[in-house]
Image (cartoon, rainbow over all chains, first blue to last red):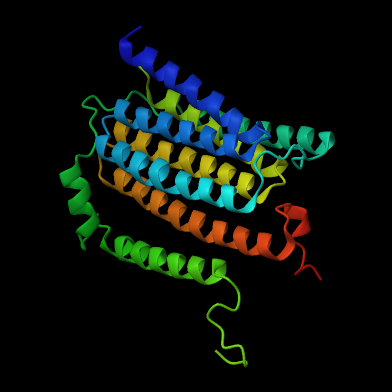
Length: 178
Length: 102
């Protein structure tokens, strides 16, 4: 058992424990902290797969951006100390558990049956240079169009978020009309 | 040495956790957090395939970046909707959001 294997199982246990916490914790703030732990664990797995750039992006954008945004939203809209957290009835929990278990069986079963043969002898991960070239390459194997589309999506999402969450009436003319 | 299958099974487990949470949670913000779990399971799959099966083809590293960008946009819009709904109803219950229900 190599150090890599030990690290993988430690990380996997950490991720699954935190994911369980995200799904079951009654306090919303603790859910968000559990999600941050899951994301950091996955960044660790990226490091284990030699994807240092993805690992850095995961920590910077996800943990530093999305989770902080979620925490702000939780603190703004909800009294996190409230004891009366809405829960589904027990029968619904059981049914959902069965559905999730079936999905797990199908997905993991497909992966195990397929097998995928032995790994490529010279395993390697894309370096930052290759990722950057692929993102700006217009020919086959390039991702210039998705890159541009995702930037449009981000702008549209941010403008939309400001519009939706802005105080009603803030930008409206009180005498009708915009 | 952990192989492709290890990562695929871990990702499937994470996906199942996310789906279970999505089905059982009634709080809108908690449901959003479960969606993030599912998205991360998908990104983990991309990186594992890219590393172990496709010899570092950059496509497998580009897609997780796109997933992270989409997740950030989705979180921004979803939280804006949550804040707007909370302002209207002072409630985050998914079942209370039935104004558009015929």
